[in-house]
Length: 147
Image (cartoon, rainbow, N blue to C red):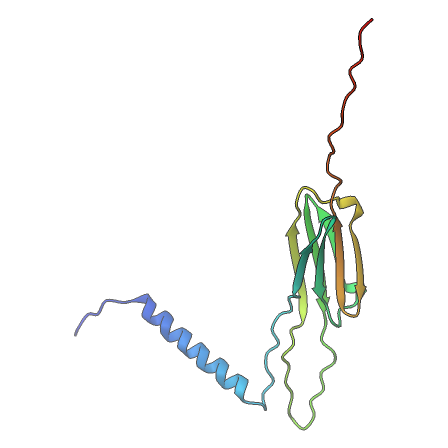
């Protein structure tokens, strides 16, 4: 009987290869439905001189399923995209778009005026405007003579 030293990395490589093989086989077989992946909306973050703007892609997300909160200088957007009733025709179905609940959180810079944040949703795009606070302007102080 020969003793061999166990190498956990060999087992990990084998497991990874097997998982890759199974996923590729599943994705190429059109007769089997794909497992939908979770939904995490894409976000664009823009800055100009007076505000920051966040644009979220939220197709088919109902406004009633969206919640926006600001607490301790953290903006959190939560929501859910629910799957329509799935009908199979001729035994074939394929689902590639992600569904489910999501949460995105962003630390806000100190110069954001949290009291004036606005949100608008149009054509599946949520736009959140984060106005900047007015910068403190230097002011001159007049010196009065003492009588």
